[in-house]
Length: 258
Image (cartoon, one colour):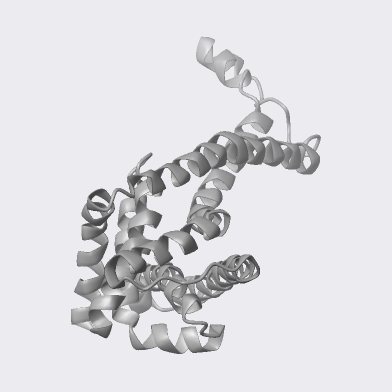
């Protein structure tokens, strides 16, 4: 498992060189476009939505202004000018943005599922010379499968994270290592999504793909961990992470099978 873990890391790092040498750098443009739409469009819409929710829930239920502190002079007048509703709306908007950031990886996986499926196939073709006959119907099925798999992984991951967070409240020992456990779980499911593009080409069912990836969970965790780490870099993380994840999954899996 440890060998496969480092294989996942190494091939993720080598993916950039592979893309450059095979003149496939244009694939990095797709996440850039989605990132712009996601952050400029979706997040701004979420902020407006959160503010509307705040208006519906709290308007009239909390005081509009902080009570006037005349004894504090100018400081008191400054405090009294602060809107409690505005502060609450700002905090809630930040919370919505944090949650949106958590889901951003899966949003990218869902939206760009057709691109990632095609990229995974092209990488394998460059390495092995094996080409797959194009079928539009099968392509649509592969896209649907990728979306279903991403949603499935998101639900399972959040369920595990919720259980661990709850248990850690009552167990100090688990609380100390909960971050590491949750990071490994998230990494596994990110890597899982990258490897599944290979398995869907082999016409594996979802159950068969799950069994196969469990056998190579070290590889999945290594790939997904690098995706998680790169995605932490503002701006370029969301662009490089998924592309390198897909490419590294193919090149690494071929090495493991050989």
